[in-house]
Image (tube, rainbow, N blue to C red; front, top):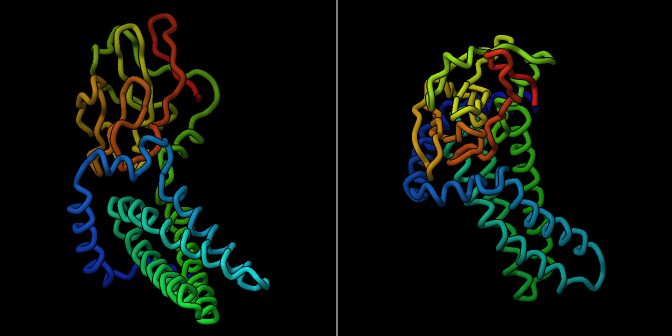
Length: 283
C-alpha cells in the first residue's frame, strides 16, 4: 500500500489532467469571497472535512440499516441525504485541491475519482430503491461505500502524510525553547513596517503598531511559504501580509487569516518590551 501511494504521489502523468482541472476550478470559483467561504476562513478550520461527515455518516448508517429487516424506507432516506450532502462537500474539496502542490494534487485527483465513483453508485442506488429495486439498490450502496472508503483513505494520506489542509507553520513552535527570547530593539522598529528576525533560528515577523508589537511565525500556515518575502496590503482596514506562494493573507496585528487558501490563523508568539528590547516566547 505504501508503494502504491508513493507511485501516485510521483505519477507525473496525472499532471496533464490535474493542471487542466486546476485551471477550470479556479475559473469557475473566481470570487475571492466564495473561495474564502469554501476554504473555511470564516470557520478558522478547513470546511471540507466538516462537510464530509454528513454524507459519510448517512451512507454508513444506510449500510447498517440495509442488513436489518424492515428498514428499506429509512435506508433509502439516508442514501438520498448522503447523495445530496456530497455535492457541497465535493465543491469545497475541489476548491481546496486547486490550491495544493502538484504531488498533493495527484493524490487528491485519485481521491476525487474514487469519491465520484462512490457518489455515482449511491445516485444509482437511490434511483433503484425509488423504483422498488431494493436488492440492486443495496448492492450499489455497498459498492459505493467501498469506493468512498477508498477515497477517505486517500484523504487521510493527504492530511496526515502530505500535510494538506493542516497548519504547516505549527511545527516551528516545537523548535522554540521555553522562556523569553530577545528579538529586536524597540526603538529600531519602524512604525507599521514588517521586520524579519529569528527566535531560536525560527524565522519570525515583527510588526509595530503604535506602542504594541506583534511577533508571528514567518512560515505561512498554508504551505510554509516565506511570509517575510510577501507584500503588505490593507484589507478591511487591517494591515496584512500576503504569502507570495498562494496568496493567503494574514493580519499583522494578530495573525488572523484575512483571505485563503489558508483556513487557520498564523501563529502569534507572546511578546513584551523590557528595557527597550522586544522579547517573545511560546504562546
